[in-house]
Amino acid sequence: MPERHTAANVAQRLTDTIGEWGLMVFCVIHDNASSMNLAMSLCEDFSHDLGCTGHTLQLAIKAGLDLAEVAKTIDARQAQLNVKEKRLQTDCPTRWNSTFTMLERLHKQRIPVQAVLEDETVTKSTARKALSMRASQWELIQQLLPVLRPLAKATTIMCGEMHVGLSFIYPVILNLVDGVLKVEESDVLTTRNFKNAALKQLS
Image (tube, one colour):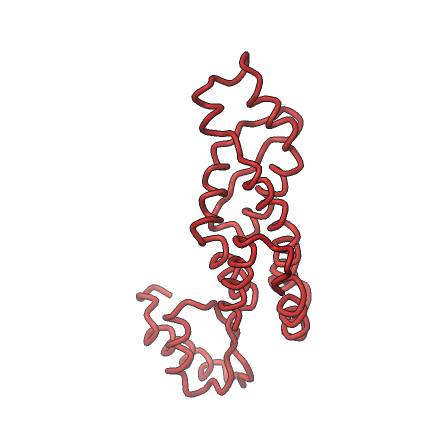
């Protein structure tokens, strides 16, 4: 599509293509960009449209991860040192589930990371101060991982190209809302806030 991807241009291109090929359209799946939502409303040929559930889940996860207290813990870890056995992974906003992978790898490598940070022959005191994690930050990661793990799995399922994802949407979202995103008494405040932010985005 050489022209600008405005809502009007997208709507016109889709309408022209449907007419040219003589297609019958039951439902259109699209990302959740505001221009795509507007394009769908401009297309009179589309009686039904649905935003990509994988993208919706990622927006919900991002809403929780963008909370100041969560983002602070994650940002502080981006500079963590590498360990020889398994290289620590960093977060990449354009790679879905990379925050979960980063936190999971860091949590598994907690003992070697702490050992390297405490070794004065390896780590300078200024670096140690900048990279060391407080107990509350480790606790937050430990609480977020069981929440992020099913969200990451759900995103992978919803983005599968080898199966139809539409039939999965309701049971997967319902399971997340009634299960992993349900606020528990044992949740620390930041975990509660993360769950509430993700739930709000999914509502």
